[in-house]
Image (cartoon, rainbow, N blue to C red):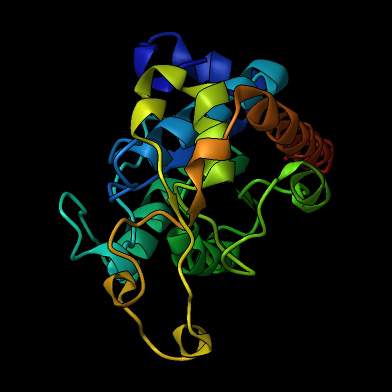
Length: 245
């Protein structure tokens, strides 16, 4: 169910029957020559819609801006602060609770948002303790990703515009991918990048962290379907925990 398409006369009863709202959270940032600036938005939106179809949840309008400090100097990137994200997510969560929602699902398409999202969830835990907040970022996909990928990850924690993320896009939003422009750019990321602020232009000129030419729709489907199953399971468990709240 698309929340913004509802009307005020009918939505109250539908909220009472669902109690679950999903907020897709993305970003606007460089993703190499073959993927659009809104890649993380497209991924978050498509994941959210598929999860909603399986859980009866509402999908809220996408929060399209993220914390992209590391890539803010690349053409097209738009950065917002962690504090801005935290405040906005908390305000949305409190408003949803006021409207009758009891499960607030944050489906994140951009790893850089993770710190702000977790902090917002903690704040909501304090201010509206009977609002269950889930923050989901491709849960449970490490094993299948390691099995399918043809090149090692450029970094232990994050991936970007590479074989994996490009495969996600080929499965979820293929119309926005130009594989004719896909490149292989596997940077040497220094260990210092994990322990001190490091703009990505210090180790990549493309914003691609891997071999995007090896991406495929089949890889994307296999990994995404695992993530979706895990997301649905988490939401169903949260719904069961509500009781009569």
